[in-house]
Length: 202
Image (cartoon, rainbow, N blue to C red):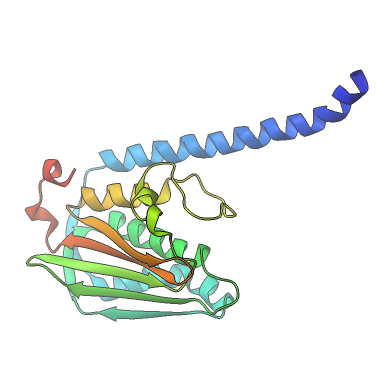
């Protein structure tokens, strides 16, 4: 019995260490989410072409390594919003597009900025990756929820954080997706954050 325990000990210690690392990551992610929700927003005029272009630049090397391509279609010149929040939102969505690409087909990402409703703008991020099953379309935005095969690292906080940030900017986020074909996320934002009160945005 002692021999069996001794042999199992390294595996048990490894499991504990792995679980501790995961828990630390989870706690840090939750704290980050909480801090972001309390940070005062700083509305400023943001030129969308350079802002979205700089977000794409961050992932461009990964896209190139995958033999992929990112296309920009920017039809709105500017909005008034919070730079840090918007960059984090778009950056997170682009990271996901790369993360959940399909290995046997070249990655294609389309980033659009379109005028939609009166005083609103829609930023779309479309990819040809794994896609999301219909029953998970709403659940992927819930805290600690993930969809599909769990073969990528993560705490299930990313999209919950994105939706919280978008709503904090007075907007909302939806998705269209077919499993195995790709996903389009649509981020609807007011043209001018100064017209939105924090209480209405929450």
